[in-house]
Length: 518
Image (cartoon, rainbow, N blue to C red; front, side, top):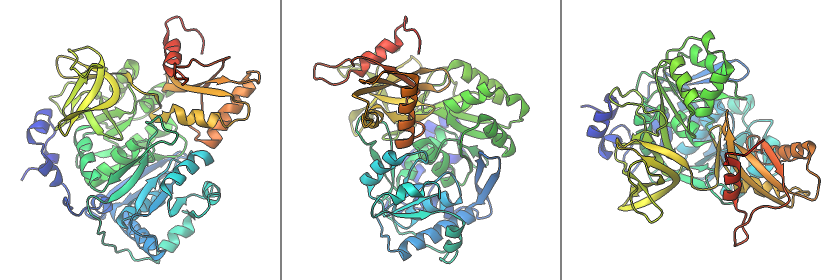
C-alpha cells in the first residue's frame, strides 16, 4: 500500500493527502503516542540519526540506537530522581549527545521538555524559568552558574561524568504518554508581551509537523538532511530535528559560533542532499566568497524565517544547482505555504512564499474582512473550524495562487532567522539606570534581513561609548543575538493619543526614501 512518503509531485501531494494517511506514517495513534519513540525507537538502530558539525572543526555522529538507549536512560534517571510526569525539564545545550538524549528522554518520561537558547543571559533565562518553573535545568559547565542563581532549580551539568553516570540506568523504557499530553514548551518572541509566549505542544504535534517535512522541506527516506538553525527555536527543533528523525531520515546540525565556511565544509563532508536553512545562512555563505572550494551534492533546498533577497536566491541556485524553495508559517499555526522541494511539477516563483500546503485554506483579506482581489495587499488569513484566523502578516496572492509576503503586521523583528520581541528588548533597556525611555524596531540590513535599532531618551549625552555600553547590557542580560546593532539618541519618542510609543512612526521614518545614514 502506498504511503505519503512515496509521492513527490505537487499534484500527488494534493491528490493523496488525508489525515488518515498522515497518521499511517506513525506507530502511535490518536489515543497513545510519544515523540521520543516515534523519532528514535522504531528505526534501524545501526543507521546514523544525527551528525553534528562543531564550530571548532570536529564532527560527531550518533546512531538511532545510541540516541534511543541514551534517552531511555535519561527517562529512567528522571524517574529515579522523583521528577514526575508533567514536570518541566529545561535543556540549555548546543547540539550534542547530551542535548538529544535529554530532549527525547524527558518526553519519553512524560515530562515536558523546554529547549532554551544557549545565548540567553540571566534576564532571558530567568524570565522563562519563572514562567515554566522547571524541576531541572540541564546545561553545560559554562552556563551552570546562571541556573545556580535561581532558587529551587536543580541544575545538572551535562559533562562526561553525567554521561558516565547515565550508564548505570537501564537502557529500556516504554513510554506511556497519551497523544494529547503536553510534550514540549517552545518559547517564541513573536509577541508584544513582556515575556515571549510559551507555545505548548502535545505529542501529536509530531504528526502535524510531518506535513511540513513532506511538502515544506521535502524530506524523504534516502535524504541526507541538514538544518544549521539552533534547535532551541522552531525551525531547528521541529523542521531540523524532530520531523526528519520521525521519518527515519538522518539529519545534521551545527553547534557553536556560526561560520559560513565551516557550514559549507560540513555540507560537503556529510554529503548533504537536502538543506533547510534561514535566508541569512545562504546570504552569509554567498558573502564568504569561498563556495567554489567545495563540492556539493544538493538535490533540495528550502528556507524560512525571513524573505530571501533576489541576489542570494540567484547565487544559491547557481551554487547548489537547484532553486531555493520558500517555506512559510509561524510557531502558533505551523507551516501553511511552501514551494514543494523535489516536486518537478511545481514552479518556484522568485519572491513568492509558494502555494498552500495540502489541507490548508488561505486568503488575503482587507481590514473589513473581505477578500482582496489578486495582487492587492491585505492580511494573510487561514481558515480554521469554519472561521478565518489572522496570521498577523501582510501579503498578496497572484492569479496562479502564489502568495507574497507584505511585511509584519505587528512589532516582531526577524533578524538572521531569529524572531525577537521589541517589547522584551525595550524592557531590559529600561532597566539601565541612564535610560529614561526606549523604543525598538527592526530596520533593513543587507546581510541579516533586519537588525534591531534602539531609540534612546536619556539625560546622559549620547556617544559611541554609551551605545556600546547599551549593546553589551542587552547582550549580557537578555541574549547575545538580540542586542541593538544600531542606537540613536533622541530628545523624545513619538506617542499615540493613548500615550504609547508609536513604533509605526519610527518604522515609517526609517523606510522613507530620503532617509540618510544609519
